[in-house]
Image 1 (tube, rainbow, N blue to C red):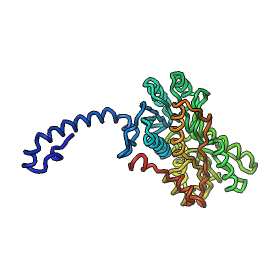
Image 2 (image 1 turned 30 degrees about the vertical axis):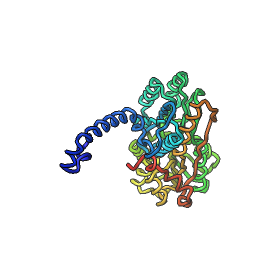
Image 3 (image 1 turned 60 degrees about the vertical axis):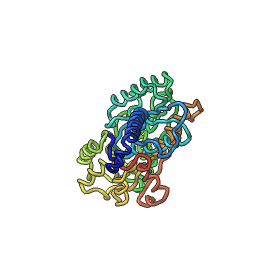
Image 4 (image 1 turned 45 degrees about the horizontal axis):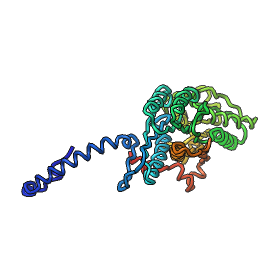
Length: 363
């Protein structure tokens, strides 16, 4: 809403300038309406245009970025990386808009399928998708590709060859890294449990496989439980961890959890039974609370991905696919083992503190 005080600084001024002010108001309202029509997609990104930048020219390019969920720090970091790619493309004169939309819960396959199908109907220029389920999302993605919409898969693999590219962590390698660290922490002997994430989540299934395959190389280590699932939230993970620890909590020497929410939930459950810091805890992913727990030696190691780079490379790969450029079939965004000993290293600090506020604004 326009405020008349912006145009009137005093009675005499208003009398002298009333006609001019009316003209200014008319133009201001018109400009506001035009901006509202043209700014809808920018609002969906949470980023907007760079102040003072020239308006991008050329055909409009709409790229839908579809995460598994929208609440965890991991997805906020990925969103920031996508926003950086958008800003750079606009600075280069491309009329690019990122549309960020995903389900709230990371087990809502139907919601994510609906999002993909809606963007296919809307004929966006490309999609960047982190599929919740490697099977359930295959047909909707293939339908998008058949409609001429390139789809870049990020984070978790899809059981389909009809994609533009796959940009992600080598998840099995990350799991193996966690397994190697667990063997080292236990000196090659002990009893451990694995709290899995969820059925159908390719990324975490690959991490779990990498971890368990590596543990098999240490005959002195016994896996007492690996058939319990954390579910999609910290709360479901906490309850699952309470359940499994109720059976094995005093009999184990180590635990492994394959993502952010399962690691946070396990930490809460271990705190309840006063076992934090007493057994060896290797988790996956990074957030403020997890890094604090690592520094306090409540967690002995975190396998950390680079979701910021994943979002950034995902959008840039989509732009290349739209331009009909040849893109790699697979892009590995890397994985790092973070421990209390190296958490202060500059490169590690950059990885665990991505510039979210810079690209998405302070929350």
